Image (cartoon, rainbow, N blue to C red):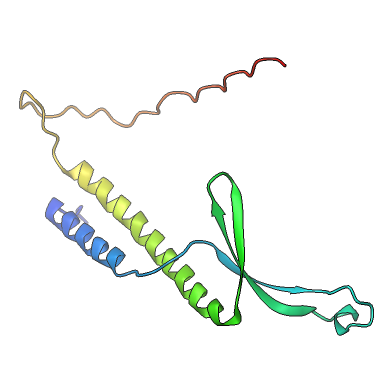
Length: 139
């Protein structure tokens, strides 16, 4: 099986862009369903085997700085938020496919040199070693 041609790859990328534009509203995170016990000894939730009060639905997501944000959802919001979370998965999958196709396009597109000579393949490089952290001054 031969590799796709440059025009075929560009057409695939255009198709993926159209799919990306059609995703609609989305959000990151997850929805959890929680039950809790109130702590009153005579409440039904105190009995063994009882799940507790609930369900309560919590939408959580990661934000910059290794933090997590959450918000309790109203019962009417849960289905809407779950649909938006599913659309985020579609968005992320489409972006990953666009990146893969774009890399193939970059490899298939001929390089243009100043002298007009054919490009010399260099291969992939490993990059440099990560830098060490600067030391903090003593207190």
